[in-house]
Image 1: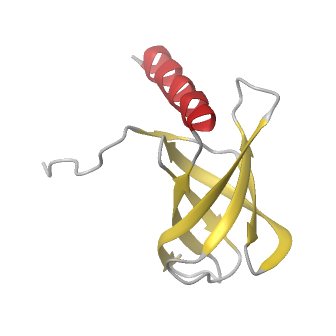
Image 2: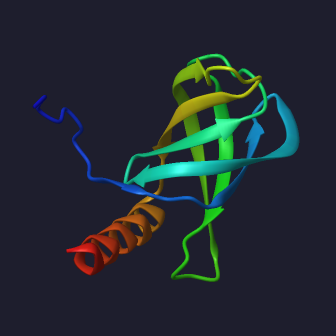
Length: 113
């Protein structure tokens, strides 16, 4: 079995997310696949180059307030047999947003064990 290289715990997170490219401020929707304190994996309708800056917003199921943060595309790949893409977004969160995400992830890990 390969050793996990991630620094942060990642959990399944099938929730909607909205994003805006910094240079193109029209909101687009996506579906998140998983979440960590420092990243989110999303499905996209279009290609966004690696290192592109964006704003991203999503709601944790345990909160009514959205997490709004800056992000950067860390990687992107085509979904086979599809016109869609899967991308890893590095979250550049403020300490309050990071604490909310961490609290949610920890609560999910406790309920799954």
